[in-house]
Image (cartoon, each protein chain N blue to C red):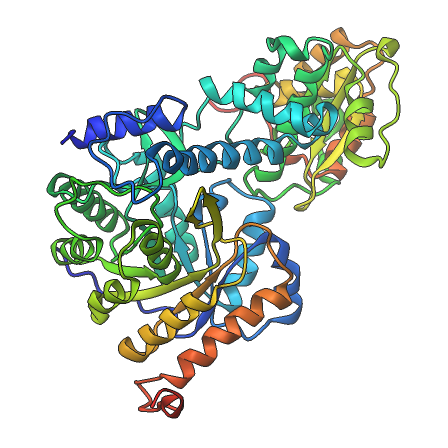
Length: 262
Length: 297
C-alpha cells in the first residue's frame, strides 16, 4: 500500500497526463482505471480552462474558442493555480502569450491580455470611498503641487505600443469586431470603478504616468513633471477631471516639502 | 475534540435552500423569493471588493447564508494553506454564515491547486490527516464545520473502512458534523457497485447538519455506465426517492439544491427547491406532523 504522500504524488502526476501507476490496487468494477482517471483529468483541465476563458474574454474572442483551449492547456503545464481559489488565477498569461510561438502573428495579444487582467483587477479591487469632485477646489492653487493623493485600489492603467484600446474595445463590444490599423500608434487605457461597474477610458500616456506617479507616492507636482516629460501634450486639467469624476482619488493630504511633520 | 457552541445569529433553517449564482443576483434582490437560505462557495468571494461583495452583502441582509468551501484540501497530506484559511476566516467574520462546510477530499499537492475533489484512500493514515486538518479549521474559525461525502470515480482495495465508517470516526474524533450529499452517495454507489440505501441508513441522524441534492451526468464506457457529478441538471428520480426515504428517517434538515453548470433560470431552480421543501414539510418531526405518511403506508 503506498503512503498517502506517495498516493497523492502519483495521483497528481496522473491527473496532469502521466499514466496511472503507484495508486495501489484499484477496484475497476468493469471500468478500466485509465477511464476512471480521465474523469478527474477532464474535471481539472476543463474547469481551469473555463476559468481562464472567463478571466480573458477578449483574448478568447480574438484567437477563437479552439485555439484558446489548446493554448490554455499548454499554459497549465507550467502554471497550475497556487492558491485554493481561482480569483486571481492566471496572472502570468500575458507574459506567456508573448513567448507562445503559435500566437506570434498577433504581437499585441499579450497587451490585450493585460487589459483583460486589468479589468478583472479593477472589478475585484478593494472598496474604498472616493473623495468629492470638489475636494481639490479647497486647496490654494500655489499649494496644489504639494498634495499627495491616494489612488483608489481599483484604478488600473495599461500602456501599449499597439492601438490597444481600439483592439480591445471592438472585440469586447462589437457584434462583428472592426478592423484596426496596427500602424496607427500606441494607445493607453485607464480603468476606473466609480461604483461597482468598471469603466474603460482611452487616455493619453501622460494620464497614466500621472496616476502611476501618485500611486508611487509622488506629490502632484512631481507626478505632473514626470507625466509632462513623457508626454508633451499632457493636460493636467483633463486628467484631474477624469480621475475626480471617476472616483479615482480616495485621500488628499497637503504636505509642504519640509517642516510640517517635525 | 472540542465542543463548539451552537451558532446563534441567523441559523440555517431546516428548509430548502439554493446555491447562489451571479446570474440570479438581480432576480433575487427584486423579487425576494421565499427560499429558506442561500449557500455560496467562499472561493468565489475571495476578491477584495467590488460587485461580488456588494451583491452578497445585499442578499445576506435578507437571508441566512451558508459557506461551502471547495478549496481547503482537508485531505491533502501537505499542511493547510494558512493564507487560504485566513481568507476563509475573514469571510466567516464578515458574513456570519449559519453553516460552514468543506469536503472529504483533497486538491492541493506540492503547492499546486488542481480545483477538483480528489478521492482519499479510506485508511487510518488518511483519517489522521483529515482529523488534524478539520481540527485546525474548526480551531481557526472557532466553530464546528460540516464535512461532505464526495462523488468518487475511483475506489481502492487498500481501504480499511467504508465511507460511512470513515465519516463517523472523523465526527467522533473532531466534533465536526456531516453534510450528506445524497446525489454523491448515489453517484458513488453506481460507480463502485455498493448499495446507496444501506449507506444512507448507516449515517447517524444526529450528525447530519445539512443535505445536498444535485443532478449528475451519465457517460457510457463500453457496456458500463459511469455517473459524473456535474451539478448540471435536475435532481434525478432515484435521488429524490433516496432523499425522501432519508428525510422520513432523520426528520427535516437544511437541504440545498446545487446547480453549478448550465445554470437554469431562477424559475426552474426555485421549482427544484419547492420540491424539496414539500418533502421536508411532509416529514417535519419537530412539529409532530407526518402528512405524507398515507402515501407510504
